[in-house]
Image (cartoon, rainbow, N blue to C red; front, side, top):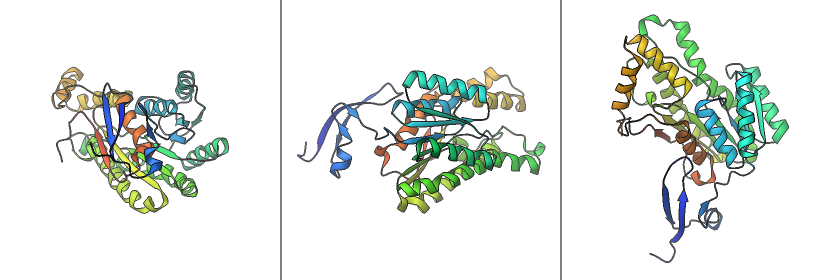
Length: 301
């Protein structure tokens, strides 16, 4: 092994049952100092993270994973009782300081209050995970213009609204991470997931544009495209798809798994592990990318 290549032992990836032996040629002392012994320091201790739509599913798993890494985590959602339960569970498990803010990201006043309360409590915002926003399965000829606008408002425009309020605070600190939860439908369309695909394709395109605009400010912007994940939201979407296609839910689920090379649906924790990495110092040379977490389901290159 070359003299300037360092071996760092074993890395356990949170949420995944694997270990990796890390070898690298350090670029500078600051980055190499993040990696020492048998653990990887993700550089998240003390960072402030907002995770939208975090009362359950991928958002909850992400907020929990970030809190485990020592972030001051802000969770938000529309369902106050569920949000309070999520806050209490994460606090008990991690001992981390959390802020729970009831918020509908489709309302500008709510978003501004979310950002204001975060700044008042923690004084900074370093990480934003855009996750709120559900787009239902649709039948094309039965969907009017108003419903199309509502679907775009439910995800794309909500992501834009929250990010627009947060980015100025990241620019002041000269460091930021924006991670947008998109979806596999943005790259691989389906017959009944038309609105989902349009939304996610737009999110992926906007992610790339935003990454170009704010790279010089130290703000890295990435997207994550989950496939079939076992979340309450995706279960509701599958029920609707089964109704549209006039088949049983069991048959639909069997069909869906058949198309996944790993032959199973994913877990929210598997998506959260990637989000935590993208939020960390270890992703310091990644921006504008969209990373799939779909068990190999997306066939595009």
